[in-house]
Image 1 (spheres, rainbow, N blue to C red):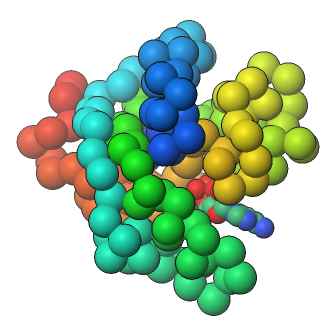
Image 2 (cartoon, protein in one colour):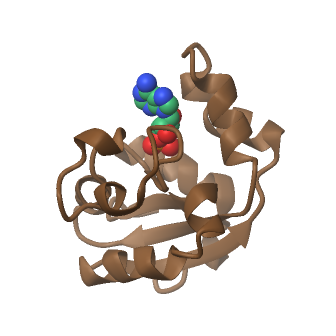
Length: 141
Ligand code: CMP
């Protein structure tokens, strides 16, 4: 696994509004290559494991219910400095605080329905990518 990869999830609010193409346009326009991508439905049990790091937070249950409430697009993005640059492109977790030109400023509905997720560190990215993808599914890496 390489340091220049990050895991992105296009969340149920965005998939339901048919804006995955628009979000991918922003992602590719910012210089990322989408090296793996699939449309899936995350189960509640998978959501609880994926967001395990937040299990003591008050929003954990709502978060797990939400991410398993509809189809999502999981994808692996490649770029130099992918993790930090994708977090910059996503914008602040709360869209009210997100900067102009970011995905969340443009498309997010609320802090819960905030359209996208991105890994926050190298070890997290490694864990999150292997949660959804096998090594053979990472094209061009
Ligand atoms: P995400 O990047 O997917 O990581 C955890 C998610 O929890 C986050 O986006 C938000 O959608 C959600 N969340 C809800 N409330 C909060 C909060 N107070 N702080 C951080 N994340 C929150």
